[in-house]
Image (cartoon, rainbow, N blue to C red; front, side, top):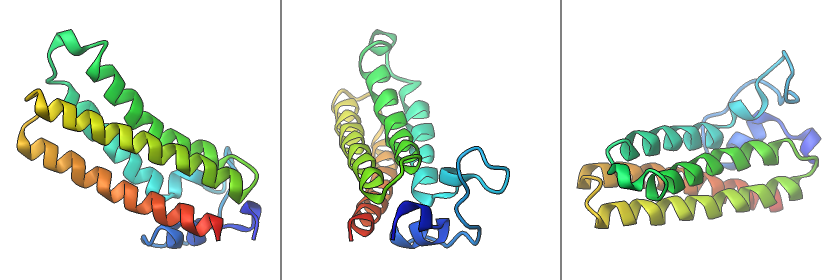
Length: 148
């Protein structure tokens, strides 16, 4: 099966999430939202939001350091899912999911740095890591399905 034959339903099942009834629409189509309907992308966007909120309390001295790096890595998680969606083949999509997984690992590492520096509370740390784990599980299942 090539990517043009994949539907949102199939891709969401690949990452073991709720099924979206609508067929995959090309990006920019009025018929559907395309990658925006992927639950893994939605979870990635939720992680972006959580990382931005958590980093708002980082010291101003971290503005161009940890704050910026965490935000960029979090954005990269969802952005690479979206970019992979726009590619023509499952192999290309899987490659961008791999890149997204790498960005997620970076996010997790940066969250741990923030925790060690006491920039986030234990509750915030747990919340961010839980969100990251959810996204990671979905990414790995999607990648495995795209490669099968």
